[in-house]
Image (cartoon, rainbow, N blue to C red; front, side, top):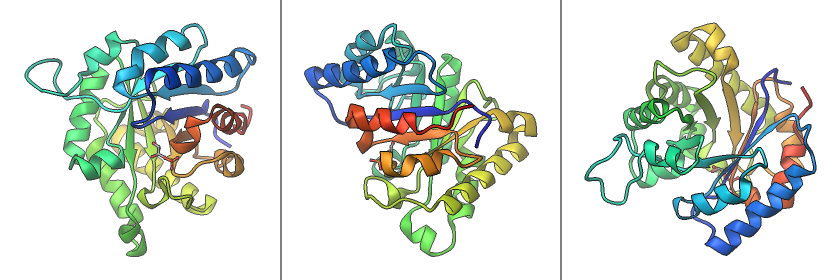
Length: 255
Ligand SMILES: O=C[C@H](O)COP(=O)(O)O
């Protein structure tokens, strides 16, 4: 079990019109309000279009609000993009960066992810930097090599426990129902922490939370969240059902 306070983060991806988003956030907020002594942090990352709507609902629930991406620049001629300053202004405390759906579909490089993380840090946002291997890389025994390179090249030198979270998401496990085995997850998370320690110093690496993401559900969460280097989850599909998201959060070991 980890000594770090677990973070259970819901990535709603491109889901949620205003009415649905409001209803889902309200359900989660109500569950949270009934439990004031939780041993975990909760975060919801809705699509840009409903960030303010969800933010209003979450107000005074203690649930953090985040976004799913940001631009490297503070402002300017970047049609369709949103800056870290705008997210901060909209009430966000966190931003997911380098999700595999962006690395793959938008050809985001490690260097771009790092620049986005620096932009997020400059605005006082917590960057959730995603890493993870593809199925082919895994089959070729390249998991640790790929993830190590992503950590070395995507995480800024100024990363600390209070401005950075890492999410390990094996690409083949995202939305597929396939989950990495607890041994594999602990092995990769342990390796990520060693890489962070070499890059940032042992003390800093010890405090940085490393989340697991990829088909995390109420049925498998307890075992995964009990692992020594797993400090929470980045949840996709199961974050769209309040009871499932809450059940995952309830699976966190108490500190
Ligand atoms: O950001 C979340 C991950 O991509 C996990 O998604 P999933 O829980 O639907 O597999």
